[in-house]
Every structure is written in C-alpha cells, then in structure tokens.
Length: 387
Image (cartoon, rainbow, N blue to C red):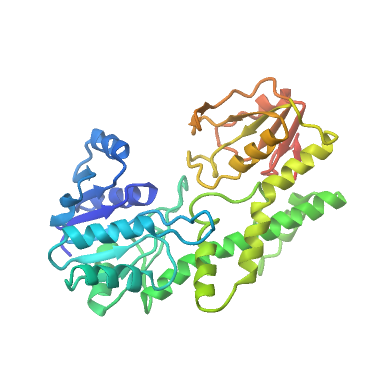
C-alpha cells in the first residue's frame, strides 16, 4: 500500500484515535468515522493534518483500507455484545463499492473476522475484499509502550491480505508478527487479558488470607519477587476495570461454551474480582462496628486506571452503590474524571473515611492525613490501612 492511500478508521475512541495518530504520522490520509457527534465535533475542532473526523459514513467510500476499531462490550447477561461491530460491518457493506483491505482491530472471539465480518459483508455485497485481523494492544497512559514499539499480531484470510496488512502495519510499527490464521491472532488477544484476570484474582484472594492472618501482603509479594525465574508479580486491588481485563476473558469463555467446553478458572476469576468492592466494604464495616450510616466517605480515584479518565467497568462504581445502600454519604475525588452521573469531583477534606481505589500521579497523599480512617486498596501507602 502506498502512503498516498486513504485509511478509514471506524471508531474514534482510545483505540481508533491512537491508530489515527500513528497512521497520519507516516503520511497516510485518515478518515476517522464515529457516530458520536460530540466526539466528532471535538476532533474536527483540532484540525489535525491529514485527518478528517466525520459522522457521515459516505466519507469512507474513497478509502483503500478500512480498520474496524469499535467497542466490543458485554450485554447485561455477560455475553458478547457485537452490536457496534455489526454496525461497522453494515456501513462497509453499504458504502464501499470496490475491493479494499478490511482490517479488524476490535477484540472478539476466534472466528469473528471470518464469520461475523467477511461472511456477512459478502452476503450483503458480494465484493471480493481482502480481510485481516490485527487485534489492538493499546495501553492508555502507558508512557513506554505505544503503537510503534508494541509488537503487532496480524493474519489475513488469504496470503494477499496478510501481505498487505503486514506492509501497512510495518509503516508505523517496529515489530509485526504474522501468525497462521486470524483465529490464532484473535485467541492470543483474549488469552493475554485472561492471563491478567486470573493472576489478579489470585493475588486478590491471597490478600484476603494475609489480612486475615496478619501478614503484610506487599512484603510477601516483594519477597516472592526476589526469585529470578518462574514468578511474575501482580498486586491486589479493588477489582478490575477497563475494556479489556473484565471483558476479554468472558469472550473467551463464551467461545469455549459454544464449543461445548467451559473454562472454569475464568468463571471463578471473574467472580473473585467482581466481589472485591463488596469485600472492601465489609472490611470497613467490620472496623466501624458494622455501622456506616451517615458516615462521610470519599472514594479516591473514580477511573479504573491511574492517569486516565476512563471509568469503564471501574470497581469504584459498584463500591459507591454498595456504600450508599449502607446509608453512607458517599463522595468521590478524581480530577481527571471531574463529572460523572451528574456529580462532580469533591475535595478531600473533612470526610470520616477515604478509600483509595485508583492512585493518579497527581494525588497529594498529605491531604489524606486529615482523614481518620483510610483504606488503601492499592496497598502502596505507608501511613494507611491496606488490604
């Protein structure tokens, strides 16, 4: 593919916008499509070189490459929700009238490119496009790993698609690794985050034991980390959040179930991590004699991850609901989120209890010294209670 080619990116969230920045930086023209008008208006106001933000899908019609980078969340019953992906598929089928390269970066179960994208597009519009999978590996707020130095897995439904996808990603990624099929790439992405979900659940459960018997979980983990092989350190927390860790393993388990197999460890890990907000509330209630009614409690860090404003699946949210159900006056502090659910970030000042869920780098720990009781679910503070 020549750099004069136009690349359409469907979805301008944190994955699509990062991709757009990388692609324009090496000379491609980019059309960034999103149906969120407010987001598109904000992107248009920035007037970036070689980049056009739009909510008009007909603007994609001149693109030679289209990348799908849309959310793949869960339904309320924790089954895969491919509604955004289906919308992207139908847009491509309607507006693309000549053969192009179609790449899926959206995370989903193995077979999605083959059966949920290519087969459906060709059923609607029998054009022989080229199809490839290149699952995203974006890590928001990571100051070291980015699209350039993070290895990229790719594979096409045919050799030509693989070659063209390889050539495209190689223009802005240092290490592009070809795997034998799109299903391998799709499964690898799910397993990467399942590995994290399972290990986080293990250390979260271990933290409950160490608290019960009076051991310092962080000292134990630091001691274990002195082993130079066979150990990878994970740290306890209030649960898991974001678009990847709470969701990707359940896509993998869904894929297992439709193939008459259940990955029991995934189910258990999801249960353990989902229960952490309840566990933390129960520990605080125990310290307060089971009485939290009218106590002023502030949640420190609403976002799921440090130094981002992303609240998706954040354990802070169920924790707030649980505490309010106990009759507590619950506030939250997060200068990066600022507004959520028609509520504003509150200063740390005269509350009775503070619960640190997410520690942004701008958090002033001195502000917490005036709070009588602090529960640090990150386990990093030296002067407060820990999991």
